[in-house]
Amino acid sequence: MSRALLPFLLLASAGLAACTPGEKAAPGAAAVQVSAALCRPTPVGRQTTGCYLTLTAAADDRLVAVSSPVAGRAQIHESRMESNMMMMRELKDGLTLPAGQAVELKPGGNHIMLLAVEEPLRAGDTVALTLTFASAPPLEITAEVGQPTLTDSGHAEH
Ligand SMILES: [Cu+2]
Image 1 (cartoon, rainbow, N blue to C red):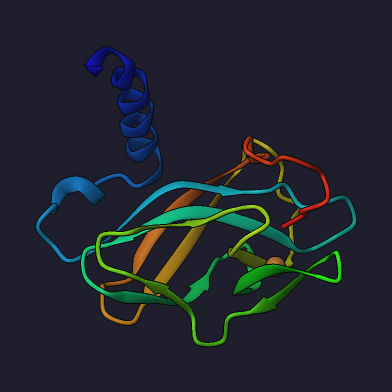
Image 2 (image 1 turned 135 degrees about the horizontal axis):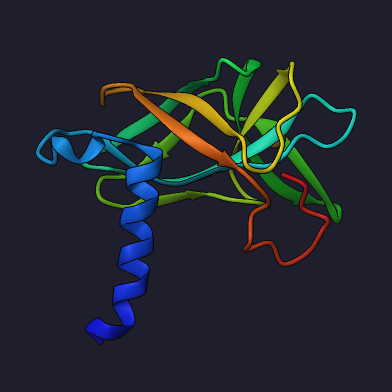
């Protein structure tokens, strides 16, 4: 059992160390934990892309805003299938984060949308994101740029 878990734990802690230095210094704070922050490379000729991450709030909270220095604007989006088409729209009231529950932003689901991205984002780059919550202190995180590995098909672009 513990042998099977070890590689995952090592990966997870390596990712945390790389993405959010110092964040673990205050485990008692009512902060939101972030993991697996990833932004897709911008498609050629486009200035928008999606970012994904997993948020776990210590207490009931809400992700209310996102910003990034690489994007003119960032929005919180939901995706849903309508008439066999993937539609997305902004979650104007933000995204609910129930206490202790990991909320996954992922391809085909909720995601962060970067708009008006001036410089193309390429795999291997990093993107700074500032996450603002209704209650928890804001978080500055670093997302890697790359293709999500968990997509099951190519049609869910965001
Ligand atoms: Cu979107």
